[in-house]
Image (cartoon, rainbow, N blue to C red; front, side, top):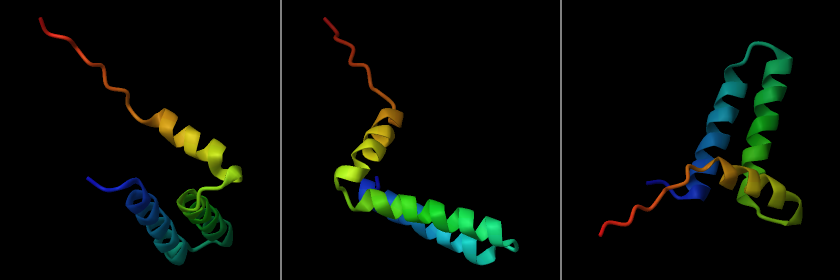
Length: 68
């Protein structure tokens, strides 16, 4: 399983690849902005705390069943 930082870096790379292949300027800007947001998650700071919490909220929650 990928580490969270590896996942963020992979997503940023994928967005940059999409930006390079985009035909329209606004599409390139969209992908580069998205890549920047993924990269921002790699550098935790006070500004990114809300973004990190949003990502954590999307993680599936496991329920633990107790067997007797």
